[in-house]
Length: 174
Image 1 (cartoon, rainbow, N blue to C red):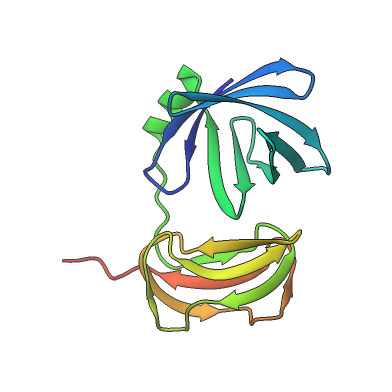
Image 2: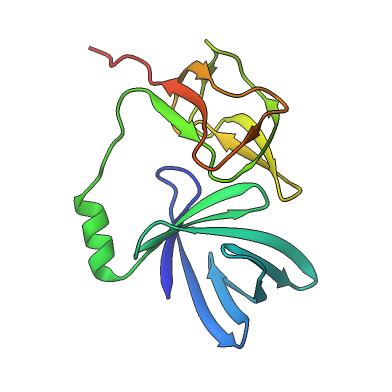
């Protein structure tokens, strides 16, 4: 199966995933192919080993054509890259407007809040760090803007879907 993968809005690369045997997959990214050994260790958690290196990978299905994948604290968005899905994605470009409230993708403990209310942030800039399954996960701002609310404090325990912070985009230039 082929996917389009993006770590940030606008950044995309082709990712190929081919089953190579029981629990073995060939993963191609940027023209380089590696074989990985994959074992499911939870409902949405996988242990992935490649040449002696191991990662815990969390996968959240976003519908029939996509997944969010968390690897080593970095969140990647995968979308099926069949021709029909690509055409649909190109024809429907939804753009979020107004303040954006960011929610926790997983349960965990807030170990650091890196900004304060009123701070200006850039898209992709880390705002909150959550520890989940002994991994530190930096939660970035989805847009450029100003932090208008921080709903958590260091030491708080959060559940999936809990509001973390709100960022408001700059006013439109007239």
